[in-house]
Amino acid sequence: MTMALAGEDDPFKDPSLAGSQTPQPQQSNHAPGTTLAVGRNASLTLATDSLVVLDEGLLETRSANCCGISLPHLPLHKNKTTRSIPFFNILWAELSNNGEIAIQYAHIVSKETVRVACINYTLEKTDSGYIDAWIERLLDRAYGASQRRKRIKVLVNPFGGKGGAQKIYLRHIAPIFAAAQCEIDVEVTQHNGHAVEIAAKLDTEAYDVIACCSGDGIPHEVFNGLSKKGDAARALAKVAVVQLPCGSGNALSLNMNGTDSPSLAALAVVKGLRTPLDLVSVTQGDKRTLSFLSQSVGIVAETDLGTEYLRWMGSARFTWGFFVRLVGKTIYPADIAIKVEVDNKASIRQAYGAESSKPPPSHDARPVPTADTGLPALKYGTVNDPLPESWALIPHDKLGNFYAGNMAYMSPDANFFPASLPSDGCLDLIRIQGDIKRHTAIGTMLAISKHTFFDLPHVDYQKISAYRIIPKNQADGYISIDGERVPFEPFQAEVHKGLGTVLSRSGHMYEAKGV
Ligand SMILES: Nc1ncnc2c1ncn2[C@@H]1O[C@H](COP(=O)(O)OP(=O)(O)OP(=O)(O)O)[C@@H](O)[C@H]1O
Image (cartoon, rainbow, N blue to C red; front, side):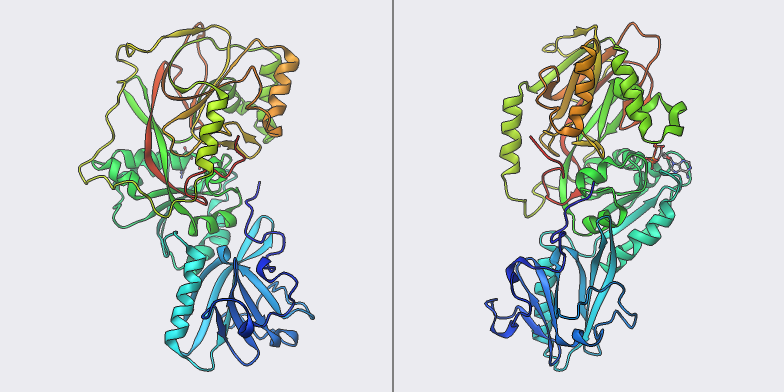
């Protein structure tokens, strides 16, 4: 899956200039101050969605160069003297002491890749006041409400995915962060749990973002590391946790950045808006863990965690593992108590529509918790406490799938929770009976990629804020919290509305087709 970049079809086409091969900036209908003359035959114009570069000189020579390096793949056409660069792709612009303007941007190399490129021009007359104001306008269009020059703690898991995270970081991510003038501090994780330690000790006043070059395992560790701080609530609100996809499961990036391409994700992070994210406390035994993505018991957990012996199959192992259990009508009996918030699909659809029709927020409206605010208290106690009085424990003797999701995509083709919202204070819960007819089961599996899953009548879909699940009549089995295996024992979960922070493209929605 790839995110839709502004102007993706033709990045050098600006809709506001449709039909005009060679715009005349001086006579254009743009407001005064949108155009910067950068030589006798060249100008830079702030159009509706993009920067338009008009350069007659491009007809004969590659007069624009990138800091002395010739520009790779610049789409210069003999009969074309303009090109446009979507504002979203603009990383930085500045005027140097020798009167040169340099604009760095993420050049679209392919659907899956952007690479840093730069244009620079020597200005003939340096009316620095006008130029500075023009650059400020350009950066304002490029960044909008997104923070510029983010201070980023980068964590690289050398064993994420196929083990290529360090290379991916250096090749596809670091150049974009550098061009966007981000302040970077890189650390390679040394062992399992290291990211918990790093986040627990992190000076949260010194960073805006923790960027995980990894799968979903490192973000899970980071949220839990921040939760160990004395000022956990403040730390989780202040520092945004993001993912640069370098693992085998990259759900955080798919949902927030709309892509599992590392360079597109780096661009999305540079331009990302602070977004509150619900986090879920899971208590099991005496342990309290934060979950940001999902909890599963039954077929999904077993397919995810119990098919290691099929690793040779690659990603087909999940499809195959799922299929085998579906047609085998495998059941995973449990007793379940749920605090339901929205119990029908029509109301869920309505709530989703109401949120998606809101304009993007201009700022993060949450008050920053004070320095002495730790994790929120558990409203419903832990799994060791008596069940809250208003909860009813209901036997699910034929349960096939118990799947609670905090985000939409669980993997690139699996938008399991299309109605989920980043901070509605709810988990989306799917329950499916394990003894449904075989052809219904196969149809259910296919419906996920066809985006018809939500409406299937046998898919029970609710919005919930807490639950307890007690597996029964099975000696052993699989429980997955954010894709990590935990003991096969009862657990209880409770949502904390907007406790965590991520960066997203929209500021309030997931990058997934909703309901
Ligand atoms: N240097 C290291 N050596 C061994 N394990 C590490 C190291 N650094 C991180 N880890 C562990 O690697 C695990 C998986 O990380 P991650 O999610 O980044 O990759 P993944 O490929 O998506 O994971 P998975 O193996 O779950 O598919 C995490 O549990 C993390 O603690």
